[in-house]
Every structure is written in C-alpha cells, then in structure tokens.
Image (cartoon, rainbow, N blue to C red; front, side):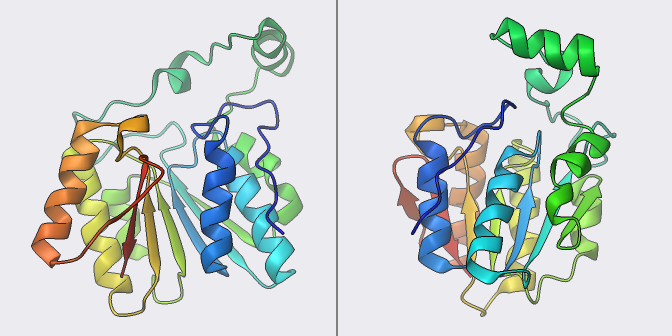
Length: 215
C-alpha cells in the first residue's frame, strides 16, 4: 500500500500528482534512513516520515537540511524561492491564518520542528548551507536522498559530489527534482548531466521530472 501525499495546508513543490509519484518512488526502494536536502516548509518531510513510519515502525531516521532562513556560504548567486521570502498565499484564508494569526514563518527551523514533532525521536533537522554541513553528515547508512535544495549549477554539482563520495558502491538512491521538462531548471539539469558524465553513470528519468541516480 502506498500512502497518499498530503499538503497539510502548507506550501510544497510537489503539487498535484507529483507528491504521489514521489511516494511511489520511496515505495519501490523502501528506505529506512533518509536524507532530504531542501526542507522548505516541511510538507515533503512530513509525508516522508509518515511513509517511513508506516513501513519501518519506529525504526527509521530522517535528516533534513535547509538554510531555514540562514545565510548562504557557498554560491552567492543562489536565489531562494520567492515564496520563502514573502510567504504570500493565493488562498486568502491561508494568508490570514499564517501571516496574521500565527505570524509563523513556515520555512523557519522552529516551524518545521513543530510540524514534525510527532516524529521528533526520529527526526534531525540541520540548519546550514550544504557546502558546509553536508560534509559533516555520516552518509554511510543513508538509503535514499531527495535532492531539492540550492538550484544553482555549482550547488547542485557540489551536493552530488559529496553525496556520491559518501554513498558510492552502496547501491543507494539519490532522487533529484527539477531535471525534466515538467519542472525544468537549466542549471539543475546541466549540473546533473555533467556529474553523470564525469562519473560514467546513467540517470533514470522519472515522469519527465525527477532524475534518479544509483550510487
């Protein structure tokens, strides 16, 4: 059984069918120890933890890395998604609820910790630039990575190099967003293509959106 992706009244990059496609990819590989780069408002993190809990009980680990409003250390040309800056919602009720009642920044570390508190014993959220913090994470036991953090060529290439070095030869999965035409970002695709060529590996394209790499 594959769970349905829920939006939880928060912003997410995996809208419509894309969340369900993402969960199906998890169900194909059934990870136990998970790393997400680019937590944003925590919707994918929550859905991931629900899936990990459903398949592993309490025996799973989720690590989420994001700037959470902090400073960029690496590529200074990196541009954060606009919704993280202005937090405007097309739904006026959402806009009023989050911006005027709760006055809550959905991308903040505090907001994400509260949103994931059901799984607090299994969750580790790390605030920082991946150019710095990713090198400090033990990748040996990571089964699955969802890469949707910085979208500049330099950041994507750096993240992939670090991940592949730590996971190489273990037959684990790195799933990259924004590769195919359904959510195409040129810098992301170019970085992934160059990385694959440099390491002589093949990329699997999922639904004209995601690029899947086997380490």
